[in-house]
Image 1 (cartoon, helix red, strand yellow):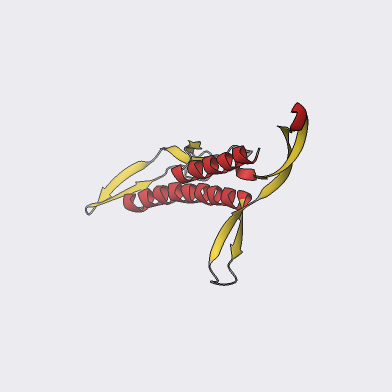
Image 2: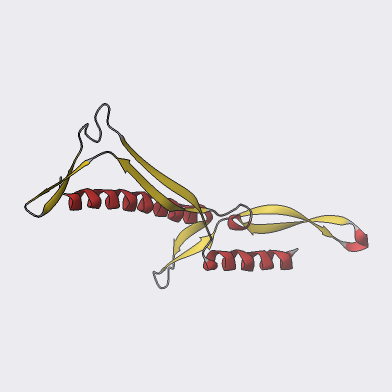
Length: 147
């Protein structure tokens, strides 16, 4: 196998893992928002998924009363996405050069019995994008004004 092809395979593996994480992160968005379409403009937009909750407020005569609030789910649970911090590949292989071409070979194969091949991905929590943090802050301010 040409060394260049081998390196492309490793690069593809990391990209695939990264794309899978990104897909999971986008699915989180669908957890907190409903996609809708405007009947007037036919444009897509998102509305927050909400739940109704009773919220204690001080009423007249200093009594505690329950007020019903509509609360966006995104304000109630931690929003966490992930990213690949580090990718490590460990292989035992032989490098050969022939006619100015560099190739690699695996004495025991990469996937067969006795193969010495290991891939490690370090996946860590990613910081929220500023847009998500800003959106959550705005929802929290609206909730504060309702209570």
